[in-house]
Length: 128
Image (cartoon, rainbow, N blue to C red; front, side, top):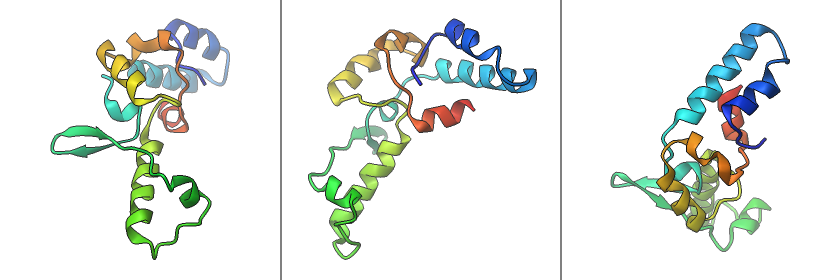
């Protein structure tokens, strides 16, 4: 699902389901659009000393995803787990650190619709 304007969202969602569920989804999307953007929404981050710090993808992350890294390799395992959890918190897919820094100057989520961003499963859960 792409990030779209409220008008387009209304056009797409007013003919589905019962009125109560339509209103809930519309209300959730309005709140979603009004959020102030934060770095964690776009790239995997952790909160350190009052600021969001971008996490780099560990070199061995793909091996970890395939199950090749065991819990016995504790430090590597924990880095990969931390990165995966941060990645799952993101609200938008496929954004790199450079793009995120440009987007961060835009105010609310509503102000970044023109970037043609794709919502993650996490973002879609907020809307439904």
